Amino acid sequence: MHHVLESEPGFSFATQTDLLSLSPAEEARVREEETASDRKRPELAAIHSCLMSSMAMLAVCHSLIEQPPDQTLLEPERQWKRLASDAKTAGRAAYRAALVLSDPAS
Image (cartoon, rainbow, N blue to C red; front, side, top):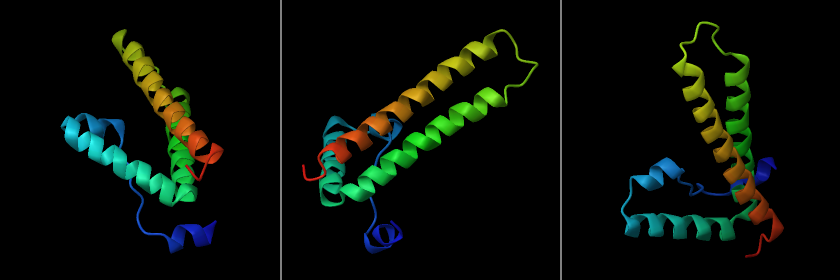
């Protein structure tokens, strides 16, 4: 795997937050670039998506383990919403990896 990471140029990826700040035309362009990058280098796309998913789930686990004991009544609700969002991000990244791995030639 080490040789795969060193022999390829940069990888195109935009987070959902990045895409929300773009115009519809810019968003379409970025998505097309990502799709082309995925097709050109499926190994890197799968690696990147798997790592993004893992990072998001580790952040969820860390937040659950490190909950401060002196939270106000509203803080746990906010935290659960944020954790749910992070878990969704992890799921989307894992799904993207599954799509690339299921048909790397597409």
